[in-house]
Picture 1 (cartoon, rainbow, N blue to C red):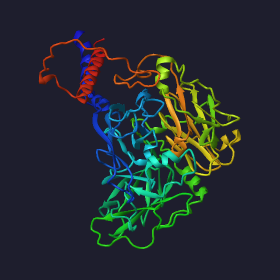
Picture 2: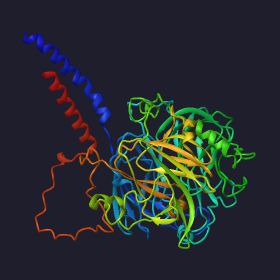
Picture 3: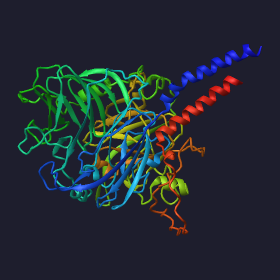
Picture 4: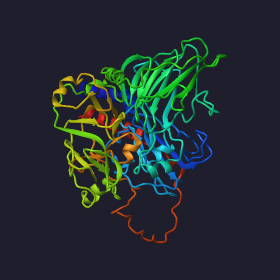
Length: 598
């Protein structure tokens, strides 16, 4: 009898041992440690003008953060600028941890001459993203760079492995110091940036271009280009002479693969495209031209790089490839609507992306947000519902944690679906119902293409169009396969609508990605509150929390004199990657053995 009952137990134990490698693979993650020295460089001169360029470890653009799903990234930032500094990780959701978001509402700035370490996890994410300075108009001086979040080995990617991957950071650039531009913004209209740089380099063949960007390819091979608009104002259209692209991913979502001759990329957005080197061995133009601009092909505002076949002896020649008419916004809307979520592909998890969708959700509340421009007390400001955001000295997150916001902000002091009668400056913090589906309708009353970003989330882009939004337009929404992303464009005089599921507690920035608009007040914060104090629901402040404003750091207590502790034996040293794996193995084994023996 004992022998017959032991047999099933033995089988379960054997099963546990066999499944251990799978569990180890699925929970393993790496710690990535980075030291960043952020400085102003006056020698780079990307447009042959004396101006400070913000570099990271001497690099412009900054270094790649190359992570995999669930990795933990430690970035120790040394601020060698003369301005306070924060970095934000555009599109990284900071699950349960808005303390690491790196915006004025979540963090005290890193003061000049000081350093601070961000520690964030790429939890349940894949895709193409970017980072940049978030305060003091610093992004106009550089400091931006690429983020890749790769799939774990156990998750299949919905396209063959490319020969190589290239980060393609494209953005407009001012021809004067960001400090000069910053000082003039609220007093008068400042001309928009006049250059378009590709990976920090000037257009190919321009008479001021001593260097330009080149991407090397081998005939017959396919490459993944990770394209990000790291600029401050201009949307651009991207295209490659004689080469078709296949769109495969945007901001952490795999999309239905569609062939494209050109692609619109708006400020703050990121895409991944496949390009096959299937043409005659030569060099070919890569072009990024501004939308809603009369810039000609020889303009400094048309970025040009080179696709170079490695056996080419022929320079790029002929006319630059034509894109759509830059004022044809219907083309842009149609293209945007054609970008659909791939419902069957896995992404960060083995289950298909489409497992979580909006086809049958019930909306709990609607935000209707109007972006406009106003003059307040003689200064030019941008507003949301006629409120221009006023940044308090104390980060909202600190105030929320230490005093429930008292003395810093009043929750829902301004309406999130109607506009103030008069334009005012104020601390705009709106509540969102925790785990209640929210519809956000974004109106653009400006004359530029706007783009909006929500930290902490991906939202589903369910609709967009011209004119004034009304509830009847919900019948035009795509609720079957809308793409999930974190930045959406809103066309002049138009609207865009997104659905978001507020399951990530914290204080989250909802902003215009257009830097002038953002700097002059086109933003608000969304507070998502879960009353459960369990740290599994929202993380507590980090041990190295910076304090400022109303919550200054406590005075240091003199430490008693003690003898130094002996160094631990070398066998005690470990890296946390190994530790997490061992814990996972041990826990999994105990679980299986428990069920096997009971």
